[in-house]
Amino acid sequence: MVVKALARWRGAALSKAGAVVLAVAASPLVQAAPAAADDICGEKVGGAILVKYRELGGEDGALGCPTSGELVTPNGRGRYNTFERGAIYWTAETNAHPVWGAIRDKWGGRGWENGKLGFPVGDELTNPENGDVDVHVFPTDLGFEKAKDSYDKLWDQAFGTVPYPKRLTEAQGSSMYTQLACHARYVFKLPNGEWNTHESWDMESWRPDVSWDYAMNPLVWPLHKCNWT
Image (cartoon, rainbow, N blue to C red):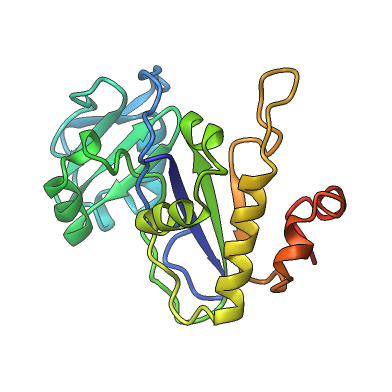
C-alpha cells in the first residue's frame, strides 16, 4: 500500500467535520499528550482525547462514561481511552478520533491499529447523497517514489481507503482521476528534500473535466499545477 486518503464532503449536511477513514501508513512513535486530565466516572481522561470527548458531549454524549484510563496502544504508536459505547484513539500524526458501533467492530476485525487500516484519521459522518467532495491522498515515501508506475493503482488504493462518493457524476470522477494522475506525474523532490506537492495530493470534484493532454502537458503544467479552474 502506497497511499492513504481522507475524504471531506462539502455542500451537504455532515454529522462531523471529517470522514470515517483509517490511515494505512505507519504513525510516528508516540509523543506525549498534554498531561492535564479530568476524573470522569472514576477514570482519568486527558489531553486531546479529553478535548474530543468533550466535543462529543462527555458522559452524556454518544460514548458514555469512560471505562479505562489512558492506555498505550500495543504497537506503542498511540494512546486511547475506552468508553461504554466506543473508544477514542490518538496519535501525534492523526490527532484524537472516536470509533464506535459497526465501524469499530469492522476495524477490530481487521486487526485494529495493527492491521492494514492503521489508526482512525477522521470522525464519523453521514455519507451525503450530493454536494462536492474533496479527497486528499497522502502518499507514503514509496508512494511518492513510485507515483508514475500506475495511476490506476493509485486510484484503486485511494478509494480502497475511503468509500467512492455516491452520485459522483462521470465527469466529476474523470476530473478527479485526471487530477490524481497529474499530481503523480509531476511530483518531485525539492533541494531541501521535501516533495513539491507537500504531504498530500488533492482531488476536488468541482474542478472541470479537462482533457488529458491539457492536464499532462509539461508546457502547461506550470500554469495550472493540477489545480485547473
